[in-house]
Length: 308
Image (cartoon, rainbow, N blue to C red):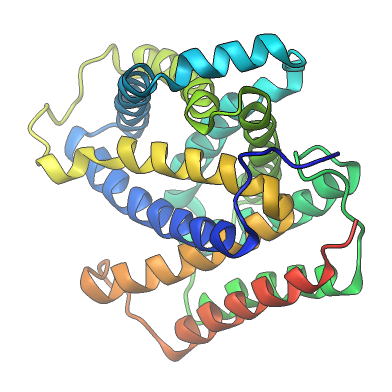
């Protein structure tokens, strides 16, 4: 399979993926704040998707990206059914993260998601679901995955969390579907030749799911009221940037390298956030810094095994 003509160079793609990870770390922080202000994780997640969808719609219409994407899709092959799984996958990740974090802790949740994501990425690349096509399972790629998992384990050393096996399994599943989400969004971006169009489809489906859940749970009335500070509402914009950048970068990197670069960005972003605004009872340790460094090494090593 050939790469999309819109695929970026590998160096730029890695930088975009790293920045995407940093944006996701920031998004998790502000979404957590918004959830606390509104008194509902479901409503906070849904509202962020609504904001993201509105932003994508405005940008897509204003730049003509949606019209170009529809025209390109008509000229090329129609998207397959699984290309639309990015939206439900993203909604599942948001729900599981919100459900599991208070129960098993953010550290263990991160370990479980990374384990699922890296393993899922190997499978997705091995089958050839991403626009980058099938990628061989090489020793370098296996070492990259192992280092990424070890890095997250090291960075969480010294933190305690009660383990719930069922929630832990759900978190691993969320990581696996993240790999599928990246491949599906990348395919839509390749077909439409417009990452904005792929992002719009992803947000539209995820928005419908999360909004339905929020309405059932809260009836649309936040227990904490609507007085959340303005900075807490930027999660939707960060989500848009993450989906668009990842949809573009996956054509050059494949799902595994994309996942590892995003993990590196998330780790670095979380490190900066903890330094600036640490959560109660948490602090940056030498293990945290070592974990970030090892994750960056994992990205470099995985890039040495990208032969098809």
